[in-house]
Amino acid sequence: MTGPAGHGAGFRQGVYDAVVVGGGHNGLVAAAYLARAGRSVLVLERLGHTGGAAISTRPFAGVDARLSRYSYLVSLLPSKIVRELGLDFGVRKRGVSSYTPDVRAGRPTGLLVGGGEERTRESFVRLTGSDQEYEQWRAFYRTTAQVAAKVFPTLTEPLPTREALRARIDDEAAWRMLFEEPLGRAVEHHFDDDLVRGVVLTDALIGTFADAHDPGLAQNRCFLYHVIGGGTGDWDVPLGGMGAFTDALADAARRAGAEIATGHEAVRIETDGTAAEVTFRTAAGEGTVAARTVLVGASPRAMAELLGETPPKPAAEGAQLKVNMLLKRLPRLRDTSVDPREAFAGTFHVAEGYAGLARAYAEAAAGELPSAPPSEIYCHSLTDPTILGPELAAAGYQTLTLFGLHTPARLFERDHAEAREVLLAATLAQLDAHLAEPIADCLAEDAEGRPCIEAKTPLDLERDLRLPGGHIFHSDLSWPYATAGTGRWGVETGHANVLLCGAGAVRGGGVSGVPGHNAAMAALGR
Picture (spheres, rainbow, N blue to C red):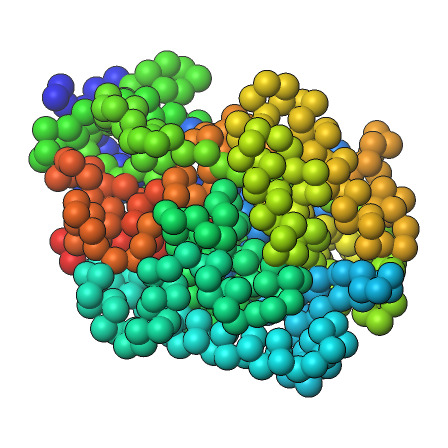
């Protein structure tokens, strides 16, 4: 340890109570809590802006549309964080949960979930021929809602033990279904219809490359985090786009006294357990800053590299395709019983039947791009038109966000550009199969006459955002209870004064702010 030196000149002080590495949403949450508690805080952010993956950008040249480019929906953000940090930020609920198109007996049809209980029941009956699947649907999600109400509040508390969480849930059948047996068993037990089974399973596969019967239960952990958000499992639209959230966090941190230095890339952390020093790089060269505590908002792999330690095994690998589009109009559907404004307002499932998901996983696991790539789509601007400029909104333009499943990073390593192009074409072909007009005919054009569509693979996310292997959760999601070595809050490391506040912490993943909150609580000795 050499003490404060170097290019730290320009900071308000040479030694900080806390230096936060990374200005993503979790790092900003941690900084805001610590600064509000009276601690001196410095945030070092590699990029020229804060927000990490939770940002809004105008990706299409000369087009006034601010899209949530990477992260795009909010579920796991506790209202307590919004309230305690005084954030000027809100969300809006979607009127429709989901629509899943299908073809039965040669006739276009689909399953609409939303618009009221009776309408949802009617949709189940029309698709399946009876209300049996609907009653099973209600019973299944009544169980997950009861679990959610008990688990979600624990995310911002010290980690419970496994047995304490089990006792809190107080439902052995629900515990076994979600925590002990592969989720595929429950899906197949509760539902008979392939389409309904697939719609349920998709929440277990977002950013997670796993089969319904994976014995490692990665799919169960992913499913759990997708159904407990807010204690209800609702996935809400961030008003003003995701960047509105991280802008509000940066404002809150600055108001509380935190310093935020963009264009400052942390390259090394040295610590003796009581004092630490962070070396950073800027356009002007390298510098150092001293801290009593360092909070790392980067991935576990990046943290290990900063500390000069061996990265954790196995290596993280993302498994998703992210596509952003701007449309001149929403496409017409082959299923004329549903309005496109309803179908795309919720989650529009494509090629996500249960058997199709299993086939896509098997193909990808064998090293091949899925022949019928599964994906889900939604239209932010239907719920929140403020992300569009006035002229675009008046002309009826809409955004579409597509999230593709079962496309692990390994599939792009040989020829990235070609694989991305082939996968995008195949994914859009699956969508077109349910449209009365090709999606390409609906795409807007940018100022240079190019169609307004961009696709991001796991390798793109690794390059742009430093996500390890393009993994949107930084690593596989963890159970929300203590295990050997997790520490009191699930953010502790092998160094007493270095904490992990990114998505790779226990109870990390998604746009939640939970790891940031918990790391701040650990730093404050709560």
